[in-house]
Length: 339
Ligand code: NAD
Ligand code: UD1
View 1 (cartoon, rainbow, N blue to C red):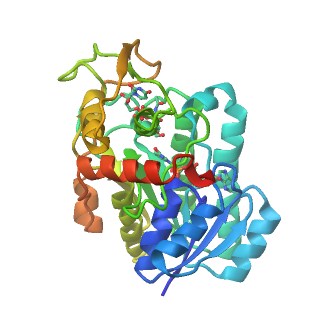
View 2: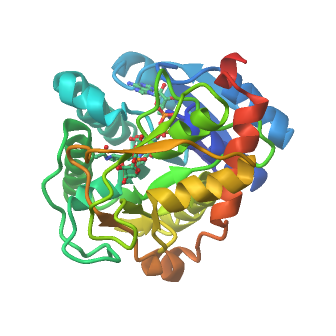
């Protein structure tokens, strides 16, 4: 069976993808500098699957180390999750974000060229669509200006990978544009473990539910949406992880360049999320309406048809499952992997 190399594979989406790959019989090698994750997630992946994987602590910008490991491991494909992802922090530290996300990706691509590794799947984001003219968003919707360096770093790496693929037709590139990943593995053993106060909605709600945070601030209720709050396409992280397995199957067919939205195609508002989570945790969740957050858009949801047609993949997990699984992870690990 093929051997898959996961940069950033100890993180939230990478660890869930490692589980699905191991379950499908792939060999998995994880390379992560543990900047935003812990080795404990690797141990938990092994517990869930009853299989072992190979872990290296390392930075994608460490050319020598990465070259040595990739040379020795002889991998069939790389899924490139490694990167920094905090939007607000990226505004304060743009150079760090570009250096890690863009610089690190270039180093990785150069090493792939040198060692003739020809398959890469990249973690991109719906953020590259900016404020879309119409929803649902298809892959042919235009890319637009991003509102922060994190978003630009994703947009730039996409462009770099497309140009690298054009220059080297032997290279296969699949860009996966994630919508809003939420939830956790149903075992409650792995999940999202944000550092400090979460920026994203679901981990924030979950920490209100467990009593670590007092109440949710709802960023604006005057958008042009059914209840005035922002609408997003939340996708269960296990569905998302399975999308990566399908992308790996696809990339083995030498597809050249492919781009897929990974979303459900359904939009929920902030208040829909509060109510659904409230049901899952069986508590009232306090919230207050706050001003809009800079850079936010009213509505964003995917047209996931292309992934269904070409990858035979579609999201199957419901909003209830997203909330229940997040709550299960949160209650089993009130302090994340440090519990
Ligand atoms: P995460 O922070 O949990 O995982 C990223 C991992 O990369 C971490 O384990 C971190 O330690 C590692 N890392 C960072 N810089 C590194 C470097 N230079 N060398 C080696 N390892 C490094 O984040 P995640 O939510 O799992 O996201 C995975 C990828 O998906 C990221 O590229 C992210 O930008 C992208 N993405 C995430 C979301 C989301 O909402 N979570 C949405 C769209 C895209
Ligand atoms: C954000 C990022 C996006 C990134 C994605 C995943 C911005 C502008 N966009 O997307 O680039 O790819 O996270 O990391 O930051 N909300 C509240 N209160 C909160 C938190 C969020 O009301 O405390 C609302 C937001 O206004 C939005 C929705 O909840 O309407 C979802 O927010 P969030 O989870 O941060 O995701 P996005 O903003 O869609």
